[in-house]
Amino acid sequence: MITFKESIPRDKVFLNNVRNNTKYFCSQCNIRKDIIDTIEISVDEIIVNIIEYSNGKLPIEYIFTYKDNVFECKIIDDGAPFDLVKHLENIDISDYIKKRRERGLGLYIVKKFMDTLNIERKENKNIFTLSKKIFAKETVNA
Image (cartoon, rainbow, N blue to C red; front, side):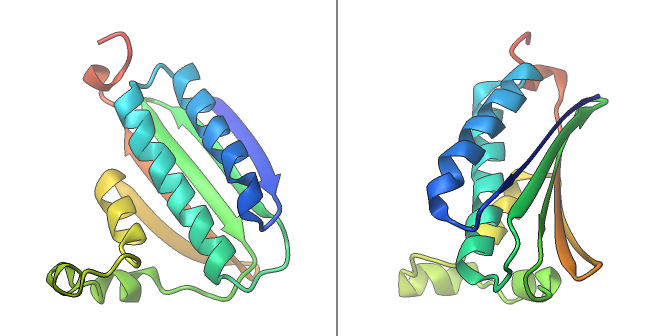
């Protein structure tokens, strides 16, 4: 198992650190670049949403693990409880297209890119968990 853990302040200035760490971690796991890009977008989207919409005070923590060909990322913040299911149920793609909305599809995209997207509330913290099975054809050795 390979693991990486870091905390960042709630400021978009630190997003490049997250992006670089995501790319580096995934490359160390021999994940193909196009798959790394979808993982990077997904992690970035969750953290951006936390920075923009969460009212938390503590740094945002993220943990990457790679075990048995599964990439997993846990993102932890102390913001208000978030109802992921309710949010995803209220997304109407045709409405977004019709109204040419520019924002609000991030979690929908994450759900499409990743195999799982879950959230749980523990000890007054939101814990987002994203995971993706990496098949042999999605590695640099394929």
